[in-house]
Image (cartoon, rainbow, N blue to C red; front, side, top):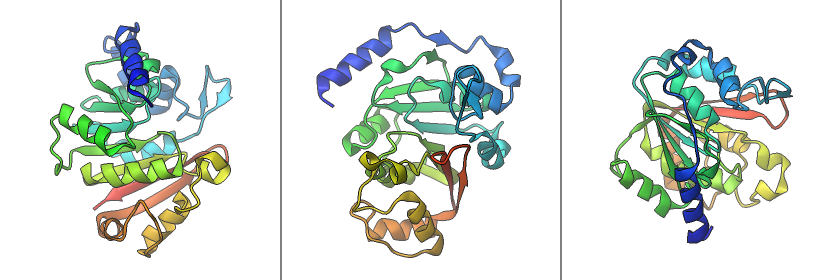
Length: 248
């Protein structure tokens, strides 16, 4: 993306009228599933006014993250689109701050004191580092309790984002990859030189080295020692897959 396009999207974001969700105190009492539905996230079982199936990820989020509900968390969402899930998480985790990264923030329609939005390409290291500088996160700081990758779903992008941002995940934190089997079904999202995420999960769980131009041997060794476990789940459709990586 050229600078003009990025600047235009930033301009549209700042001047677009957005929905302030902070006054809605009743939303805090809703279940995570109903929060996803309320704000329009396809993470739910149903969305678009319950007329279409969502991915069905709610029960898996609850399985791993429900115990963190009232803790003070820093949550990073990569690929926020209109901000539906960010809005839901800001209500579900009432004491937390949600950081949203998206290459096109002109779609964002919610606003909250707990949600910080950045229009960057998270797959570019220079852009990712600029985000850290803006938020005063040092380059050696484990800052985030939860990182969610719901970005482009291109295989090489998933791996690039993992390699950079995993370093900023706290001990006992969760790194979550949504829709990770998209490259298995859509050729334009695949990269024949890289292991698909289902194979990557198998390699990591077995602590088995693999060929990758993005994840070098040293980083693989880091994952072998730093990851406590990886659990992956099948959602409602065949392309609805989610993985939870827990850090030691």
